[in-house]
Image 1 (tube, rainbow over the protein chains, first blue to last red):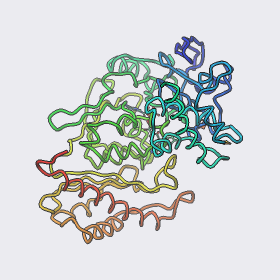
Image 2: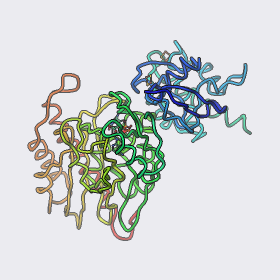
Image 3: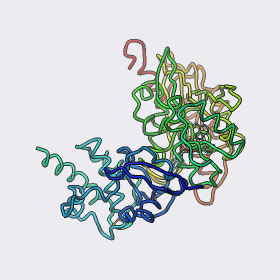
Length: 160
Length: 289
Ligand SMILES: Cc1cc2nc3c(=O)[nH]c(=O)nc-3n(C[C@H](O)[C@H](O)[C@H](O)COP(=O)(O)OP(=O)(O)OC[C@H]3O[C@@H](n4cnc5c(N)ncnc54)[C@H](O)[C@@H]3O)c2cc1C
Ligand code: FES
Ligand code: FES
C-alpha cells in the first residue's frame, strides 16, 4: 500500500511515522524504529513472541497492520525497565529461572504485564490463561507461572 | 486510497461504494492480515454502530466489531447467551481474542469458527447493510456460500450487529469444543446447544455442530427427537447416537479420522445438551439469575 502518516503513542511518547499501513507493527518496530526487544517468531499469531500492549491489551504485533495503531497507545518490552533498574516482572523472571534461551521472554513478560495491569493479584489459573498465547520451547512454563505470581507480590510490596 | 478510518457507518459504506470492489472492510485483522490484502482497507473497529453490547426488552444486540474478549467478559452475554461467552473464551489465545471480532469470525466463514457456532445455536440474526443502503437480516448459519466463503461480500456489505433473544425462564445454552491443546488450536469438533425445559421435559432445542458443512450445522433430526423427552442420561445417549447418524464428516490427515470425528460429534453434542439443560432447570421462575 501507499505510505501514509500514522500517529500513535509509543512507550509513552507521541510518534509520527511515514509508513506502509499494511506493513506489520512488528516490522515497523524492529526494522524502522530499531526496537529489537519485540521478537519475530511465527509471523502468524501462533507463538506470542511479538506480543505488545495496545491500549493496555496484549496483542500479537505480527498481526497488526501498522495503519491500525493510528491514535492508539502501544507499549513494548523496552518500556518496562527504567535505565539500569529492571521491572519487577523482569526481576522475578530472573529469580525464578523463567528465562533459558530468552526468545519467548519479551512476549511472556508483556502478556504478564497486561495481566498484572488489570488484575494485580491474579490466581494461578489466571496466569495460565494470560500466557496461553505464548509458546516457550525451553522452560516448561512452571517457572514462568511462578515468576508471574511472584512479580504480582513484588509489585504489591513496592506500592505499600 | 489506502488504510481508511471512517467515523460513521454511512462514511464506511460511501468508501466501499467509491472503491467499487477494490476496498474491503477490516476489523480485528486476525484473519484478513494473513490473506491477500485488497487495494484499500476500511477499518471498522472505531465505529459506534458496530460497538457495544446492550439488552432491551429481551433482545441482546451485539456490535459486529465487539471482540471475543469483550463478549466473553460481558455480564449481559454471560447471563443471557452463555454459549456465546463460552465460545468466545475458547478462541485462539488472549492476544487473538483481544483483536478478533464476532463479525470477522462470521464473515471469514471458517467452518468451525467458535463464536459462529455458538451464535447459530442461540438463533442469532445478523443485520447487514449494503452500499445501496439496503438492510437485511439473516440467520448466522445462512450466511455461508461455500467452504471459507461468506455470502456477506465485505467489499460492498457490512455486518453491523447480531441480535439474540436473551435466555429466559427455563432456558439455557452451552458450548463445548475438543482440540489438540487448550489454547491456539482450532477445534476438531465444536458444538453448542440451546434448550427450553419445562417440568423436566424438553420443550425446544437447537443443537449445532461443526465442522460438518461449510456452515455451522443444525442437527434437525436430533432436535425433533428431543422434544418432549425427559432430561436424563438415556435421552443424552439417544441424542448422541442420533447426532452422529445424521451428519457426514471428513477425515483430515493433520487432525483426525472421520470415525474419530464422528465419535466426537456425538460426545460433544451430548455434553452441550446436558449442560444447557442443567442451566435451563436452574433458571426457574423466582431464582432467575
Ligand atoms: C493464531 C490464530 C488462532 C485462531 N484461533 C481461532 C479459534 O480458536 N477459533 C476461531 O473461531 N477462530 C480462530 N482464529 C480466527 C480469527 O481470529 C477469528 O475468526 C476472528 O474472529 C476474526 O475476526 P477479525 O475481526 O480479526 O476479522 P478480520 O481479519 O478483520 O476480517 C475477516 C474477514 O471478515 C470481513 N469482515 C470483518 N468484519 C466485518 C463486518 N463487520 N462486516 C463485513 N465483513 C467483515 C473482512 O473483510 C475479512 O474478509 C484464529 C486466528 C489466528 C491467527
Ligand atoms: S511472531 Fe507474532 S505470534 Fe508469532
Ligand atoms: S526460554 Fe527459550 S523459548 Fe522460552
